[in-house]
Length: 297
Picture 1 (cartoon, rainbow, N blue to C red):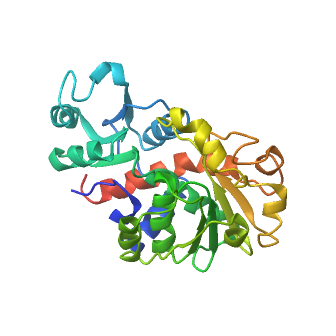
Picture 2: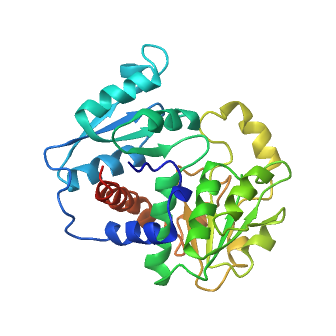
Picture 3: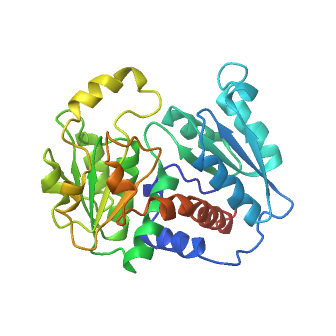
């Protein structure tokens, strides 16, 4: 049984296979007559829509389960909810707060568990990002990705994706917001040695892709004002984009706060690829589900 809790659960060849499956215009109906449970502790726009439609495109029936319907570890334990859902569904996707929740699910599940987001990782988004970069450049190996912002769950999954794909990663974060040494040790095991700097210009200069995320993620609302102060100077602006390679593109996992982490002129400008990137969430989910079911799920 294979699960997908973060990108580094995969080998490079497996990640490449998922990307190829994601572009299949006529995917096999591997979920025909089967359900896919989609458990959400956090609200979502892209993740829910993309994953539900991916299930439909594989012939399956998505079953959305909101937080009020289950109450993990309140009405029922994570383990019991997982065992119950596995009785009816071929796969379980979960968008949760604590990464330990998806780890506990995977420990007892008889069907594949897909991490749709946790406080530690956002792997399905990273797969969509690779699809977007590959479509733009025709390849991934040798590209330089610059990430400007908090070394958060998104940055972590991107780092694993970059390492497995032969890309170079530079990340610019304010003091106190960079990757921890424990993160770096795990990244090195998967071929990624991110260059960490505190000056966004140093990260973006000559890069093929410039990426950012919100400064305060869901659940960090109380830190928002402090983070706005700490991240002053880290906005992806037209001036900063001018430091990148001539054909560089801009990516953002959304939702975006124009005027904070990115200027409106950048995210809405000609170098932005955020909408193809958002569309690729569905294709990435479809390729990932196909691959997991190939493994015997």
